Image (cartoon, rainbow, N blue to C red; front, side, top):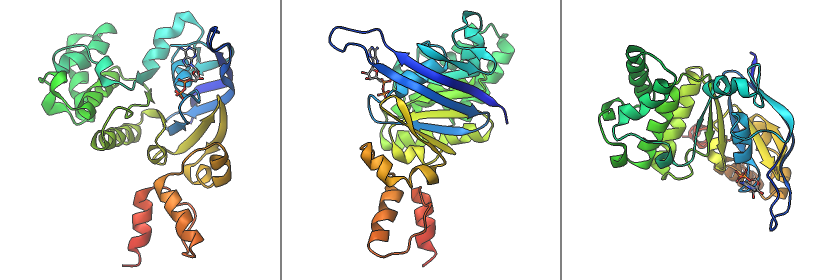
Length: 279
Ligand code: ADP
C-alpha cells in the first residue's frame, strides 16, 4: 500500500519567548503512514504530540524538513484544502468542535462548506451518523449529549467530508471511561472500513489497539513498531519515564513471580484469552 503521509526530517520550533527562550518542539522526525493503517502516536505531556498533529494537516508548518500528504507538501498554500480534506482532524474538546444547535446540522456543516449538493449532503450526514452509532440523535441538541456522544458527533462531521485519513488528537482526553471506550470502538470501526487512522494519545491502553505504535519523547521518535515490539522494550520505556500498558505490566510481574506468560500479550483482551485457556 502507498503512504498517505510522509514526514521527512521534520523539525518544528515555536517562535521564541523571553521566559521559555527557543527550544525545538520536534526534531528530525521521519515517519511514513501507510494507507489503511492504524497508528498510535504516544508520548508524555509536552513531548510534542500535538505539535506533530497540527503539522500533519498544515495547521502548523515545519521549521525544517517537509510533510507530504499524498503528493502535496503541507507548506504549499495552493493545496491546503486538498490536504485538509484528505487528512481530517478530530480534537480533544468536543465542545469546541460543535457549532450548530441540531446534531445533523452540525454534521452537515463541513460538506456544506465544500459546496456539495444538498441530496449528497443528506446521504453523507445519514451515513456519517450511522458510522458513529448516533443516527437516533440526529434531531437532538448537541449540548444535551454526553461528552462521548458529542465527540462522536464531531467525528461524524469529519467523516461526512469523506477524508481518507483522520488524525485524532487526544480525542478521549476529556471523556470518562465509557466515553473513551465508545470513541476507541468508533476509531477501530472506521479504520476497518478503510479510513487511515492516526491516534495521538497518552493512554497506553489505547495505543495497544493500533497496528503500529510510535513513541515520541522530547520531540524525537524513541520507538516505532508493532505494539508487541514497542511494549517489550521495558528498559527504554522506563528510562523515558513511560508507563506500560496494563496487560504488559501484569505479564511482566507475573513472569517475575515464575508464571510462564508468553511474550506479546499487550491488550487486556489477550490476557483474558490466555488465562481462560486454563478454565
Ligand atoms: P504534547 O501534545 O505532547 O503535550 P506539545 O506539542 O503541546 O506536546 O508541546 C511540545 C513542546 O512545545 C512543549 O515544550 C511545549 O511547551 C511547547 N509548546 C507547545 N505549544 C506552544 C506554543 N504555542 N508556543 C510555544 N511553545 C509551545
